[in-house]
Image (cartoon, rainbow, N blue to C red; front, side, top):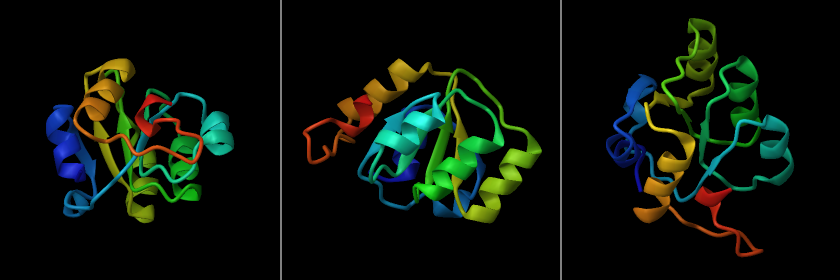
Length: 123
């Protein structure tokens, strides 16, 4: 699935790095707790979150994620957007709640599983 397809599925607004929308991704995770993302998430390309602070971008960058989707109509600050732009991370915002957003992505085929069989978009 491409980031462009994710944008369309979630009716999301692209806030940074629009030139990277054709990047292919194979997995996603949803969490508002960055400590859980650091501890449990492996090889996820897209982070869905309602947490709006610079730690989200720092976490995504550490985990080599290529896209952050802010759910629940959350809007990142210009500072957060600048950090993401510097890291080359696509940032989008959607009105959808996390549960619905993750469900739509999973239902549409973004469901790579890890070695334990846990679905990426269902985390």
